[in-house]
Image (cartoon, rainbow, N blue to C red; front, side):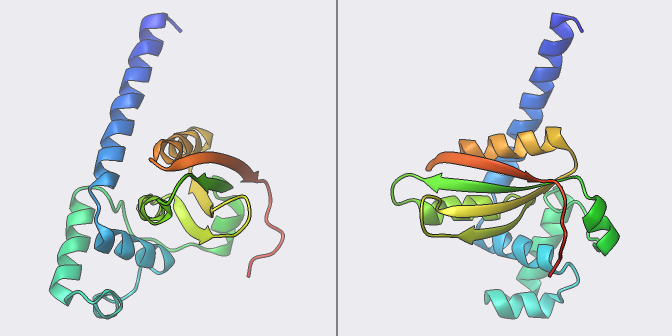
Length: 167
């Protein structure tokens, strides 16, 4: 590859990363709560989402429609056991937070669609995030986004090679 092509590709990647980061940073707590609930079950009725969040059904429907329209929600799907066995890159990311900003960090992490679960812990690490991405390049990008969140001091990543038992 030529240097200009590499530079152009880096520029495009940075543009895309900036676009994703800006979109995700514009989500509020309700948007993040909806994303978390819909990740767990994309078929959750609007009435149930409204009841669990305290917002009206019209507000929930409008928020979901807006996130679909702007691309925050890329689609609704199911996951089969076969999908889990052959999914892209799955990883556990251990996260250390500096200072007293754990709540803010958790909000930002909850808004990243590739973060499938987020656990608070004791000991050296403040959070354990379960990530799932299509490939290593996407994993690298999400990990970069996580490391850029203000208040995150250190991360350690562990890519899951094989799952021998599910639930």
